[in-house]
Image (tube, rainbow, N blue to C red):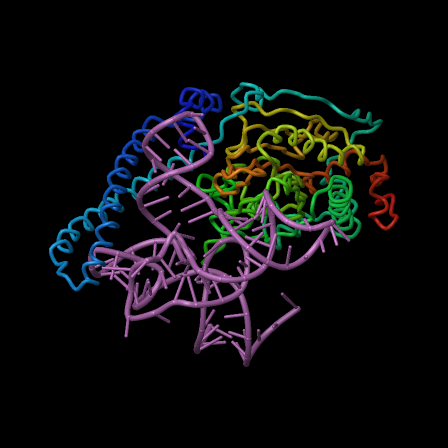
Length: 423
RNA sequence: GGAGAGAUGGCCGAGUAGGCUGAAGGCGCUCGCCUGCUAAGCGAGUAACGGGUGAAAGUUCGUUCGAGGGUUCGAAUCCCUCUCUCUCCGCCA
């Protein structure tokens, strides 16, 4: 959420930011409502002051056994007016809030301009795509041939776009989760976290999935809960409504969770394989930091995610999303894209974002500086470290052998109980 | 799922025949004094949000005693709804 004060003070800058990301929002309307809000508040506080002081007088009169009937009658009118104003105030406040909650974050100055995916900027490429002396197969063909993936039976159990792993495949998925968690906890200093996989509406609103994107979520029937689309949601909300101390920042969490996405509107896209599933595993990195540190923290977050790909010897590239391609809550996002030889494309495997105080304001996460009285919103960041199913797919495709077997990257062998090849 | 108890400041804990309680007392913490050191002792301070004013420190007003609504001139205290926690019973990995 944007700060209404900030909107008032930097109107033209914010308008420009919203325009850059193709958001059509009527800010002037919001400011008019806010003016009205202030008017009401002004009169209301005045009357409440009057009521408080006269109520004290009444108490004293009654104590002295004097007659207070006359002022009580008068105060009845004041009270009625207060009640009306209170209703008006809460109405206009929730109107303003409903509008503010629909405004996306403003892109950071370093974010390239652009309308769509096509305008994203390449940051760097790491690792050389291997030259195969045979036609590389798609991971779904490799996986089914090795009997470690079974999409057909998964569809029978549930429906399209659900995964079913067997044997060394299930083991590989689990190995990847452990491998990622170990590196992030032991080497990068994140605290391992295992959060709820179902969250309430408030948590979804705080991170920005709601109210705008409800159709992307799986809703639990009969209760206002949702399956999480990413660990970002429960983990960011850990510190909701809390005031942290400066000394405890930055706070780093890593969490493995399954992720559930309805993928509404993506029918026909990536219908085969592990790339776009309704349920997939992900290891997430979440940071809570001081505002002045957040862009440095974004760089290290990106490095932490890249480290996994480097150790697995998977070729990848990093891009900066342009303003038009940014997610709703993000001020700046790097995507890491892994090389998939069968399709001959780089595919997103991690998305690392700085949300600045956008989520913190919605979730009400603040901190207090050493020796200062004022509280301040922290900055939140998160990134995939990494999407496990897509990493699995990348390993199958990049490490496939002419005979259809798949070698296991060295770094992963200890996590595979010594298995160095799936055949 | 059934029965009961509860929710007050960083923590513990007073406060229910409505008014002087934003909230006693204690603990903790911060600063100062004292003191070979430590401990003890003494003194002061110690919620959030919003409005006004101020360059700022501050100051002043309003709101907040789980959340929302109601009664009343006035609610932490009375009434209603909801949420959460605890205890017992049932069920259960």
